[in-house]
Amino acid sequence: MNSVLQFLEELAANNNREWFQSNKKWYEESRDKVLFLTDVLINEIGQFDSEIRGLQPKDCMFRIFRDVRFSPDKRPYKTNFGSFICKGGRKSMNPGYYFHLEPAGCFMAGGIYMPPAEPLKTIRTCLADHAEEFLEITEAPDFKREFPAMYDDQLKTAPKGFPKDHEHIGLLKYKSYIFSKDIAASDVVGEKYVEKMVEGFESLYPVNRFLYEALA
Image 1 (cartoon, rainbow, N blue to C red):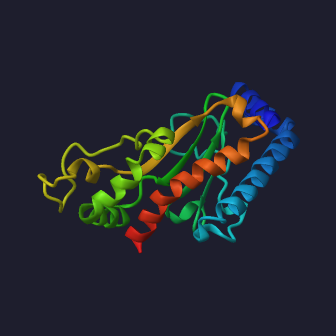
Image 2: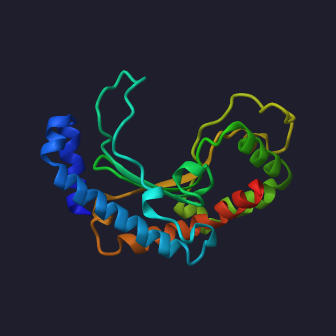
Image 3: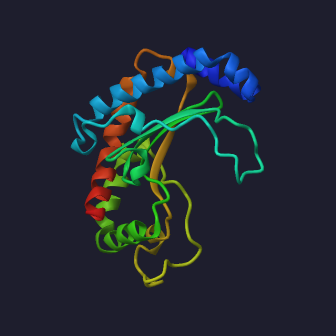
């Protein structure tokens, strides 16, 4: 992954079409390495999560090209590679496993990020009745050691349709149910990078299993 991070570092310093076109082969080689990594992870995660078996890497990996139509930031390219490995691929809005490669900060994550209103309400309804089961997973010492806190993006008040005095109203206010942790650049280029990622994703599987069941 060292050459992939080097490519992204150079792209960040030269985020323009001229540089990109003159280094297109380097981009394609980097993209192919990330697709290969995604394929390896699909196969490894599939050993404990049957929902993602048979996925195609191209359906999980995000494009590097930015949509600048409505953005004041007109830089044409993202400065990271990332793949979201989940049932139906990255566009399905299902729970899954994400990895992010960027010189400024690599990380891995799992869960569901900013789901639309209806599935979010479905998850909250399940949590309202089964919060203890979710907390048993996420408050377990081994899990907390790996993933200390959930992504902190919450409503200021109780979500519509839920009582303000619910015992676990804090949990119901979340807009996403996702856990992440940073990965050191030295680990990304290390020999056991895949092994460490798979271990982390396996720790996240019980969260995703809860979310699968909540959405079923």
